[in-house]
Length: 351
Image (cartoon, rainbow, N blue to C red; front, side, top):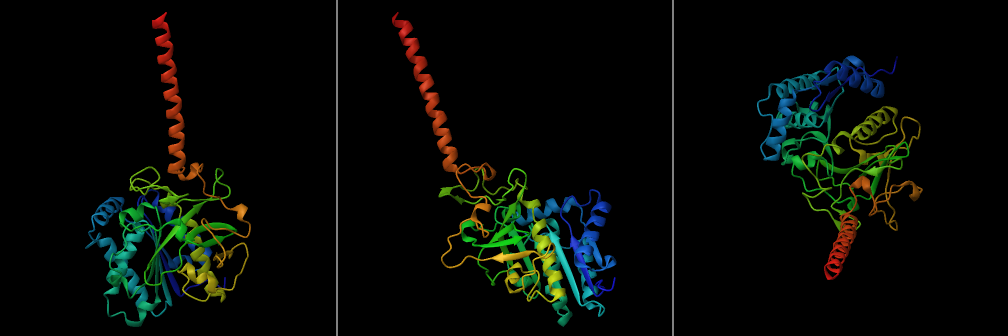
């Protein structure tokens, strides 16, 4: 094929447990990325680190230590990427990192950020992570790198990084792909490389889609951290649902090649600058509220198509208000039952 891209390289750094069936995983991701981006298969590289290092990274990040210091794996990956950046054959080097892979990508970015020998070549580098379990506290350590870290507001990764989660009601922008909500976003904050989002999921139980993030303010009911429905280091459901967002960013890469995307393709906010090209493949776009719209959970053109948040929403664990009311009803029934029992006993005693 004439349109195969041979002057760019693409790295996908996978998360923990990627070493299980590593050959199958590698083949799957490399083929999928090559087909979607049209980057030649030999230029698509899959990287996977041992899971024991993932556990250490989570613990170190949680206790505010920089992980993966003097890691042979990180240094080896960094050297590979630097060689590609210095190779005049390549116009761009793209690096995606998921979960633990995102932590590795951020550490590589910190090291490359200090490399003053790269000069203009550093502009060829584009890095993006999804649910990274390590994000630098001080963004000056990655200030020279074109990198963005996407993280869902109640994902386990936000707990690892001890980032204060945003409320869903502060996310008025909707990212849509194939007429499905991918995620909700706040108004863009250009001063940070960390982009908080709220991921959505579609299933047979939720055909209209539902937000995966467990908001602390749902229907004016407060769900405090540490209670049911709150962010927990043990909850990984949200963590495995970044695939649709990854797909959108790869679509935007192709849009750049077609000349219909003006901006940084790793930044989904730049989608509003693109000429909308609604086909089976390039069907993502941003929906922003107008001044007189009051959107709490986002909407498409038909508001009935959106999964509304309400007190009976079992998918979100229900609101505290609903659970408390149910508990109160049960308690009331229990008290009536005990009272009637006592009454029957006293009547028998009188007889």
